[in-house]
Structures are given as structure tokens and as C-alpha cells.
Image (spheres, rainbow, N blue to C red):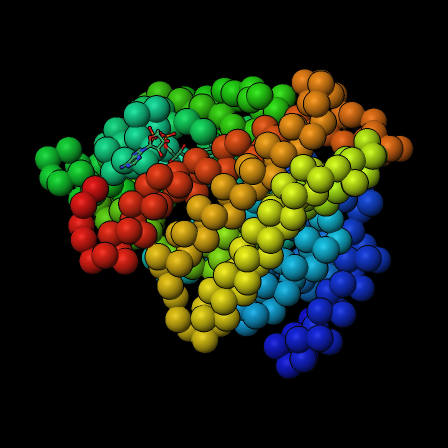
Length: 385
Ligand SMILES: Cc1cc2nc3c(=O)[nH]c(=O)nc-3n(C[C@H](O)[C@H](O)[C@H](O)COP(=O)(O)OP(=O)(O)OC[C@H]3O[C@@H](n4cnc5c(N)ncnc54)[C@H](O)[C@@H]3O)c2cc1C
């Protein structure tokens, strides 16, 4: 049985996690930004952390998690960044589990939480549709109750890592005759259900992480409904406050800046005044973002959730990540056009991939334009769209 990490001082806790990472984190995964754990690697990571007593830091202990304070969860993120760990999505533990804990039945919690904890079942998030992204409430994938089953028809898109997932949580329309938010339900489906087809979309980074999912008369048990029928909008919004703090972290910008420094060293531009000037600006902006992040995190640790601040932090963090990756390409000159890693100053740098990973960051987790509108409305007390 793991110790109660909340009893350790922050420094002692940090040392303990750092030492564990140093001793156990697979060397081949230490490719920050570029590498994201998927499929068997992701399962292996969850299994490793589960067996070593580090799995599910945010989950309450009654569900097998660590029940860690937010402060200690953030320390874990910081140390993973410092160790150059790969990105990991963990939709089951991070997105679905809090929903099941709040709205699921005891049977659903008993059935789904333990395999997530042990890394045996991976989940994906089926919200967006071809014409329903920012305006998610307009979604049209339908689920009709027939006896003790729902029959689902429609299409989802941009579903991250769907091709590697065992299960999906889906927003479906269960009533067309009411205000659009009032006719949505939240259901769970096995990816192997007949009629459910996954088609990966190859993106500009040469990755097939994003997928389309087609539902053709997909039958799922009615007991896979989470929360009340037609209350899916409320269920879907059930909160990820802590995760939004991670989304606004300066980690990706900082790691891309490290690559920029290696590049500048490698091609001998350290004395170039224009280059130094642009880098100083980026460095200061990363520093400012880190300060804002620490401030919002401190407030959250005290229990004060600043929703406008969280949204704006996501906007700033992703805009900055893009600016650093733009600078990477500008600095690399003609090498920026290569589709393979670039060998500069004795190191291999995959500049194009970093750039391509930065591009969509202003779209997912709430498009930045929409986040700006929300923050403006909150700050000004208006309700304009
Ligand atoms: C890398 C990546 C991973 C994703 N993973 C998932 C996933 O796992 N599961 C899932 O369900 N979805 C996922 N998505 C989808 C994502 O949630 C949507 O792309 C996002 O909500 C935007 O919706 P959209 O693509 O339909 O664009 P639209 O909503 O059509 O927006 C297009 C443009 O219009 C702007 N716009 C839209 N509405 C407004 C407004 N009211 N005011 C101002 N500007 C506006 C947007 O900012 C954007 O620039 C992912 C997307 C990406 C890029």
C-alpha cells in the first residue's frame, strides 16, 4: 500500500516522485512535445504507475486514487516536464472518471473505474461532429431508446486516439423537440460494438491520432446512460477545473524554447542581435505566463477558481507555444521545410513536427476565439455571443 503522500512536505514529495521517474521512466519516451503515449505504451505507463502507487493523483482514495492536494498534483506535472516526459492524454482517468464519480451509478463506477486505474481500458471522447464543434449543443448524432437498448446513428469527428481506445463516451441527441441543450444525453459505448466504424485522419504531422467515427445502428445497453436522460449537457460540463490549470501551463512553450536554444547554438546564431532580441521577448513572455500560471494555481489551491483567468491562460499558453514554434521554423531557414528531423550541432531536431503539433493547440480544448468571448463576457458581465 502506498504512503499517504499528503503527509509529506512538498519538497520531500517532489524528491520522491523525481527519484521514481529517474529510476523508472523509459528512456525511449523522453521526447517532450513530439512523443505522445498511445495504445500499448499508454497502457504500460498507467500499469507502471498503478503498480508503483502513483496512479490517479486526483482521484479520491475511495476509488483507488492518491487523493492528492492540487499543490502536489502540480508538482507531479512540473517534475514530468523537468524529466522531459512524453505527453499523455489519459482520457479515462482525467475526463471520464470525474463524471462517473459525480453522475454515474455504483455499478458503472465498479465496472469502469478499476480497469482505467490498471491501464487495461483506454477511453476516447466523442463530442465534436462535422458541424458541431464550438457550437457543440447543435450536435445531431441520435440515440433512440428501443426496449432496453439505445440505437445510435450519426458521426463524430476529431476524436483523439480513437483507433487505440477500447471505449468511448459519447454525447447523443435523445430529444429533438426541446431547446438544443435540453435534448442531449451522455452514453458509454464499447468500440467493438457492431456498426461502429473508426476511420483515422492523417494529419500534417504524419500522425493518425485524430479519427472520424461512424455510428450505423449501433446498439448499446440502456444502462450505459450516465446521469439522467436528456441531462447530458450538464453531465458533459462536469468539471475539469484542475485539468484546465494544466492546459494553461507554460510547459510546451518552455520545451519548444529549449529546442530553439539548441537550434540557435547549433547553427551559431548566439551572437546575432536580431535573434537574441526575439528570443529575449519569447523568454520574457514564457516567464510572464509561468507567473500567471503560478498565481491562478495558487488561487485554485486556496479553493478560488477563476474561470475567466483559466480560459485566458489557455489562450495565452497556446498562442505562445505557436509563437515559439514559428520562431523555430524561421530560425531553421531552409531546413524548416524538411519532413524529417534536422541534424544540427550534433543533435536531431524534429522542427516540423513541433510546429505541426503547435498549430491545433489554439483550436482544441475550446477554440481561443471562443475562450476570448467567454472571458470578455465574464469580465464585463455581458451575455453577447
Ligand atoms: C488536435 C485536436 C484534437 C481534438 N480532439 C477531440 C476529441 O478527442 N474529442 C472531441 O470531441 N473533439 C476533439 N477535437 C475537436 C475540437 O473540440 C473542435 O475542433 C473545436 O471545438 C472547434 O470546433 P470546429 O473544429 O468544429 O470549428 P468551428 O467551431 O467551426 O470553428 C471554426 C472557427 O470559427 C471560430 N468560431 C467558432 N465559433 C465562434 C464564436 N462564437 N465566436 C468567435 N469565433 C468563433 C473558431 O474559433 C474557429 O477558428 C479536437 C480538435 C483538435 C484540433
